[in-house]
Length: 280
Image 1 (tube, rainbow, N blue to C red):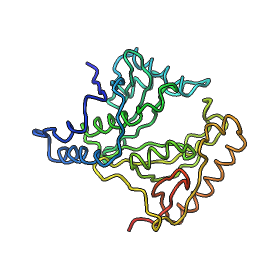
Image 2: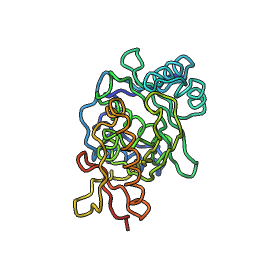
Image 3: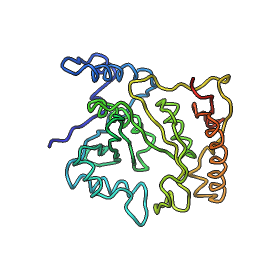
Image 4: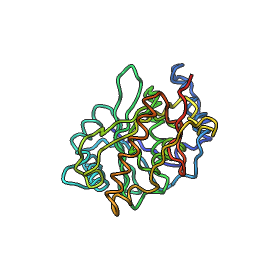
């Protein structure tokens, strides 16, 4: 099977708006039209033109992706073994590499949810450290949306560490995904160098592809806030005891609010998570 590729220049916003949907079933046509309109509402900076995203179909490619994941999450055990990536790809799930020229600089893997949910769960995305901050995250999310829409998937879910401010900002403020659940120690003990010794609390978010992005609530709507550190990764390296205290503090602050029915309505760098009343 030939690789399918996506580049930053392959599907600009003007192409999305002008695309013909003749021959697509009505449900998919509605979703794909909404895809074009919805992306226009997300603040998008110019994307890197040198990166290309390709589906991975060969054994060699999935082994290279596994090496990328292991470089991002080093440890005694492989974080995403090649045989698992191969099984996911061969059964029709989402397994891609991010390339600069012939070099794979990132990889991502996801799988379909229950059939009735028409969803995909984006389980792991890793980018080599020297390539971060160059717009690959936005490029990848755009690719996932196109890939999902072509398979009648209506929303994408994933988890992220609620202590990582840059991820909270990107997921909730840039993409407008909705935080749906706080998961305590979701993956249990992990052996990689990043997660070792820490509880793996995660926020589950849902990105409804055919709906307007969630907007940051106004001050009048905010009932409570939960602050997080600006750079938990540096704290874990330089002050691990303080980092561990932040884990407990944020968990014990957020969970009671969520249990009373409040929901996370957004994120700001200074105030942290913005809690709002449940939608009526």
